[in-house]
Length: 125
Length: 180
Image 1 (cartoon, rainbow over the protein chains, first blue to last red):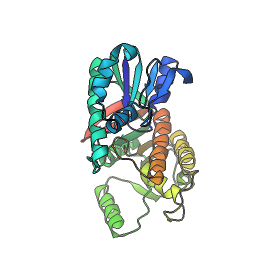
Image 2: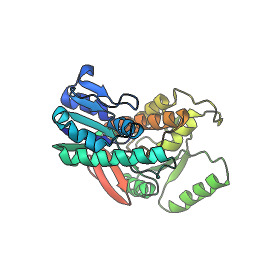
Image 3: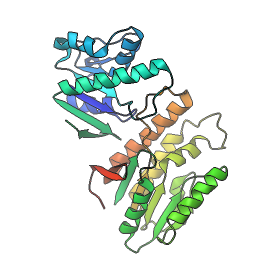
C-alpha cells in the first residue's frame, strides 16, 4: 500500500493518476455519506471516510484493520488537515483526531508515503 | 532564475525573498513588486513595516495590485523582480471593485497568465505565496474558491519555476531545483 498525503488542492489525485496510470474506474472517492468501498486500486479522500466513521460511531483504525486484506495493495490519498487551529465544533474536532490517527496507522502500514506540495512530490517514507 | 517561495505565515518568507533577490540581482536592477492595496490603518502599518525592512537594500518599488504583467511597462525586464505576494494579488483580482460580494471567476486564470509572463520574461523573478491548505475547517464557498484559486496559481508557478522552496520556521525545504 502507498499513501499520498498533502494539503487541499495540491494535486494529490493528479499525481496518483500519472504515477500509477489510473483510470477513473480504478478510483473510489470516499464520502461522508457512503464511507469507503474496497476492491479498487485507489481510495481517494480517505479523510471523508474518517468523517463517515465519526458520524457512524466507528473507529477508522479498527475498521481498516478488520479489512486489511482488501486494501493492502491499494493507494490511499488523504488530505493533511492537521496544521490549523483546533476546530471549535466537537464533530470537527473528532474528525480531525480520527483522521490523524488513521493517517498515522496507514503511514505505518505503507510501503511508501509521498507528500505533495504545490504539485511536487516529496517521498517522506 | 525563477523561485517560488511558500510556507506558513510568519515563517520568514518575505525576508528570504528579499535576500535571494539582492543576491540574484548582483548589483543590477532590483524591483519590489508591491501587490497589497492598503484599505485601512492596519494595512498601512504593515506596508510601512515592510518598507522599513527593505530600506537600504536597493529595491525600487512598483505598485501592482492588479494586472501584474504591466510591471514591464516601466521596469527593465532584465532586472530582478520580487513579487510579494501572489496571495494579495489574487485577492485584488478576485474583487476588482474592492467589494467583497461577488468574486470574479476569471481571477485565477488572469493571475496565472500575468505571473507566468513575468517568470518567462524577467531576468530573475521570485514569487512569494502562502500555504493555507492544511487545516480542518469547512469554509464557506468564497473562501474555498479563494483557496483552490491560490493553489492553482501555486501549482502553475511550481511547474514553471526553476526552484520551489517551502519555508518552515525560518528553515528552507527545497522541493525543486537548487538554492540561489
